[in-house]
Amino acid sequence: MKFLDLCKVYIRSGGGGGGCVSFRREKYIEYGGPDGGDGGNGGSVYAEAVEGLNTLIDFRYQQHFFANNGIPGMGQQRTGKTGDDIILRVPVGTEVLDEDQETVICDLTEVGQKVLLAKGGNGGFGNLHFKSSTNQAPRRANPGLPGVERTLWLRLKLIADVGLLGLPNAGKSTFLAATSNARPKIADYPFTTLHPNLGVVGVDNVEFVVADIPGLIEGASEGKGLGDLFLGHVERCSVLLHLIDGTSGSPIEDMQTIIREIENYGGFLAEKPRVTVLNKIDTLDDEERAFIQDEIEAATGAKVMLMSGVSQEGIVDVLRALRAEIDDNRLREKRVEEEPEPWRP
Image (cartoon, rainbow, N blue to C red; front, side, top):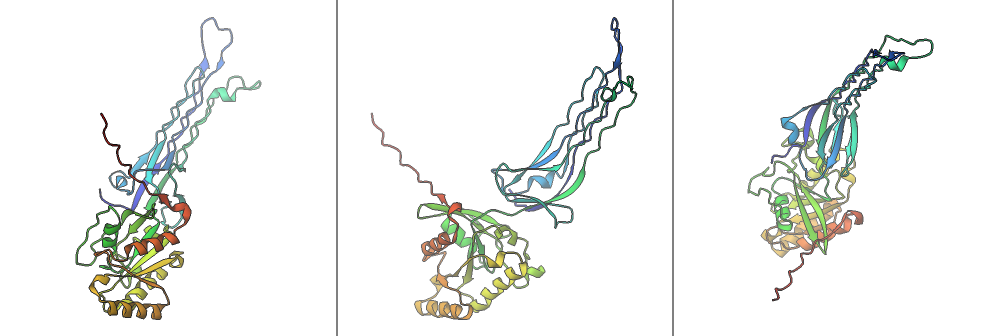
């Protein structure tokens, strides 16, 4: 399944059915009179967050969603049928934006959350509605109100507990593969990751979700590389894991580049707690590790941990540091597989 986090949809609610002009004409009935029914309401368009989805790929193949119109009223005081509603089922974490891509209409962050996007038109009154003591034979009925037509954007921001940041080839996908069952693409060239990946990580009997996004480069906020298109997926994270390539010749500049890009991105991303880790220490000896660690800490003032995604050295310590930064209400008890009881005759 391809990953899609931004799409454009066209929606239209149903128009209301028109009212009916009708009079009662029956044999052996002494008094007649108006009996035209009201028209039915048009169908509405809703957006609902559901489980089991993590992409908007379904909306690539269908962009138009039109609700049914209401049925017009009929004689014998019969009201028209209401048009069927349409529900756009989207992943949790989807934002619905207006056509300008700036105005946020709603943000669906919980399963089952349902929001009205376009209300159906009301049905028109039949002539029965206008009967009175002074107007006993009204010959008028109202038409139904038209539906609402809108152009909207759907933008998905994955809901994870930890977001991975770093330059291309900093070891983000390797870390995700080493700590979870996720199998992202890993290779020795930049921009191996082209779309975000999610993995469930467990440590000390609790689990949390880690999001891996494509690497950032200098000038990403200006559109270089893959730009900052995917930074929205770490906006909802509790903590950011900043990985620095230990084999890089300029680790301080690499760290400052990432910090500068997330500050240019704006919002609260730069203010989120960060865990800084020097990765790929399996390629360094003890003296080189200590030198680079002290150099980064002296230049940036941030505490730097050591880790290797390949040899898995220091991974548990990093996971525990992440757990300490995550809100307790976002942690989940780790599922422990029960051993089957031995067979007995």
